[in-house]
Length: 97
Image (cartoon, rainbow, N blue to C red; front, side, top):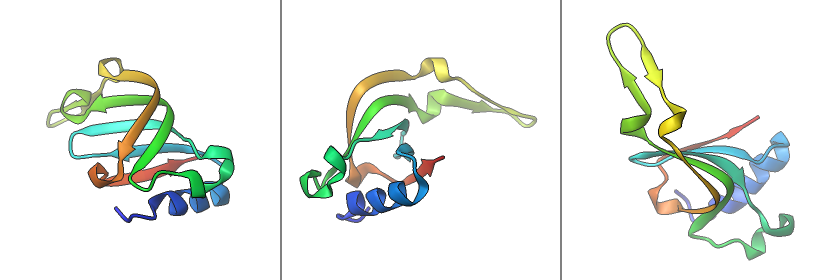
């Protein structure tokens, strides 16, 4: 991911009016709210995204699929009040309205 990811996220958050995000890494699905200090990215760390109220799920434990359907289990996830995610580990993200 780009080094100015926080500036990009700040713009998307402003345009969409929501700070909810889903982040995927190679092994994790992470839901949370992006924390931007006082709305200023000058104070954001370039290498991490700070999340509030984060829910972290291992992808291999989260969903199981067979030929007919998939079952996803939120109860195998862990909740954190605060979590910093390295932008180098992010493979995809989506701002959720």
